[in-house]
Amino acid sequence: MRALAFIVLISLSAMTSRAYAGDPKIPAGAQPLNDAGIKSLLDGKKFSFIAYDKRLTGTASWDAQSGSVSGAYVVKHAQRGIYTQGWFVGEGKNCTQSPGKKAVCHMIYRYGDGFMEVNENGSVHSVSVPAAQ
Image 1 (cartoon, helix red, strand yellow):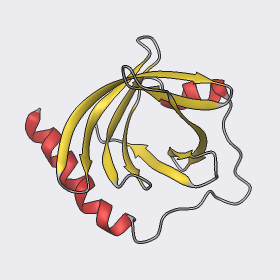
Image 2 (cartoon, rainbow, N blue to C red; image 1 turned 30 degrees about the horizontal axis):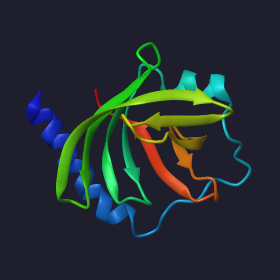
Image 3 (tube, rainbow, N blue to C red; image 1 turned 90 degrees about the horizontal axis):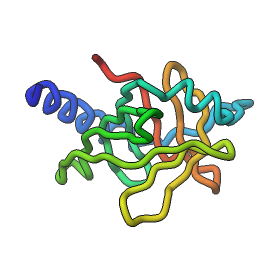
């Protein structure tokens, strides 16, 4: 299992340098998902992501029943770790919260089989695609 996680992180790390060359834009005419759409898309699923505003790659497994998201990450090709955060959806936003920290919320747009998380200012925070199982 550790070997598989390492392979996923190395693959994501290799993708990162190419992906940052041109940060993605919200597709023309795309509309943000509502609460039910966000939960339906994310709950019980695992995604691989690239965060463009933080230069971060990783995986995220979303679980509405426990109200958590967990996975592994790589920051700027160097710092690696695992995480678990609180997860909730409200007012058309997907929110995560680390213990003792303020919640971070993003609008969610469908993006192929995955999704984009979009900041309040309209910039793309991250793009997530279904992770290999």
